[in-house]
Every structure is written in C-alpha cells, then in structure tokens.
Amino acid sequence: MPAEAALRCEHLVKTFDTTRAVDDLSLEVSPGQIFGLLGPNGSGKTTTIRIGLGIYVPDGGSLLVLGHRDPLEVRDRLGYLPEERGLYPRMRIDEQLAFLGTIRGLPFREAKRRAGTWLENLGLAENAKSQTNELSKGMQQKVQFAAAVIHEPDLLVLDEPFSGLDPVNTRLLKDLILEQKTRGATVVLSTHRMDQVEQMCESICLIHEGQAVLTGKLDEIRASYGKSTVRLDYDGDASSLEGLSGVREVRDSGRSASLLMEPAADPQEVLRQLLDRVRVRSFSLEEPSVEDIFLDKVGYDPRHEATS
Image (tube, rainbow, N blue to C red):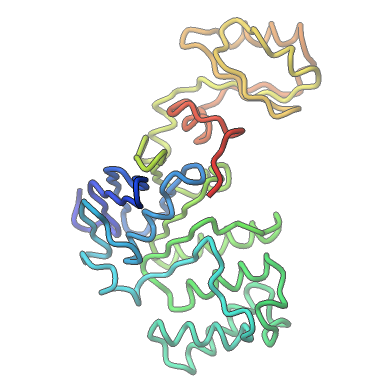
C-alpha cells in the first residue's frame, strides 16, 4: 500500500470479551476522496472508526493515520461525527460550536466567526442562542456536523451522518460533504444505508462480521459484475415474479424489483415472461447496486438485520 494513504489499516483485530468485532481487517483510504465504509449494523464499522481515531487501541495489526502511527498525534487534523450525538444538552449551540472549535486549536474569535458562518449555512442562524435540547433531532445532527468540520480537518470521519434527517436536509448534508472533498479533505463515510452513498463514494470497503468482504474502486467493482441485474417497475401481484426462467433471485420492493439473472440468461426472454404476468412500467438492464453486490457476496438478509 502506498505511504501517502490518508488512512491505512493492516490486519486489524479488536476483541471485546469473547466477541471479535474487527477480524483481520485491511483497508486503504487515498487522500482527497470520499471512501465508503459500508455494512449492516453490528458489522464492525464503528469499532474500526474508533481504532482509526485513537479511541480504541487494536489488539493486533497496524495503523497509519495521516502518516502517523498514533492517531492522537494528529487529532487536531481529524474531524469526527459519531453515530451517538455528543453535544452538551444545556449549552447554547453558538457557544458550543465556538468552544469545540477552540479545543481543536482555533483562536476564540476565529472559532466564534466560523460558528456563525456554519449556523447560517445550515439554516440554523435563528436558533443560535437555543440550547441543544431545544432542537429537533435533525437540527442536532446538523450542529454535530458543524462541530466535526469547524476546524477544517484533513480527515473527516462521518458515522451514520444522515440519521434523523428528512430528504431536504439529507440533500443539504450531502452537498456539504462534497464541499469538504472540494476543499481537499479526505472523507470516510460509514453507514449501513448503502443506497445513500453510492453516488458519492469513489472507493468502498464492505464489512461483514468484522471482516472486509469486498474492497476497491466502486466503478471497477460494479463493472466486474457486468450488466446482470434487471430493474423493474411494475403493477401486479409480487407472486407473479416467482419462477421466472433465467432469474436466480428476485428482490421485490412492492411496485419495483431487482431481478438477478443467471449468467447465460436472455433479458429479452425475461421481459417476454414478465409481460405475460404483470404490467411493466419500466424495464432496464444495469450493473448491480452496492446493496445487490453485498447481499450476493454474503447472503445477507436485511429482514434479519442485527441491531447495533
């Protein structure tokens, strides 16, 4: 792995009692990219993040963060949005952001100025004097994001950043994450919602039960599977999609479905069968999504997803 990696983990191991949360995990995050650390709840993502930030010490393996073996040596160059909110509930949010900026090395006046700018950018200027516990969950999440980036970190780690956000604020946060990349930051985006980051990440690591099951550039991973997935929008009974010749698995979502085809299947034949069974509103042959690839790789059933 090249020495210039923003984050490099090699054969990481972390065990809690009898549970191995991270099991021989290796990954590399190149500078200036958005990297997706993806997997279901309980897969080891958060433990991996906390090792990379110096919160946990690994039981085995090696780590390099911004060229340093000890993440605490570069903590002022790191930004972290945790899955669990870490804001002070009875502190004004403008004062809180300024305070968090100062403990990351900013002079007080500069921290105060940046706090005001971020609250304006996030549509929270009118709430500047509100206490954290007076805000909605979505507002608190936006304040938490501002706290993670106020000091303009070189490496930004976001753990489930879209939690509690409605579609409008999810779009806003995505734009702000892309702005962090534009200014040169490296972003590690950890989530179990693979659909939310598929268009943002250049490279990914799919984690299952503490192990990397697939890692690399997203475009290359999807291309390696070929155009083997039919995207279907339809009206009709879901049971009509069962038993299609040339289709090895159906993942139905109600009025839409993903049909995973057998290697030698003819998509035109699949379409002919569908026209006899349901009303087809759209039919396209595509590369599989990240979620499709993950489910295919580990046989994971989202209906049985573990809780974190």
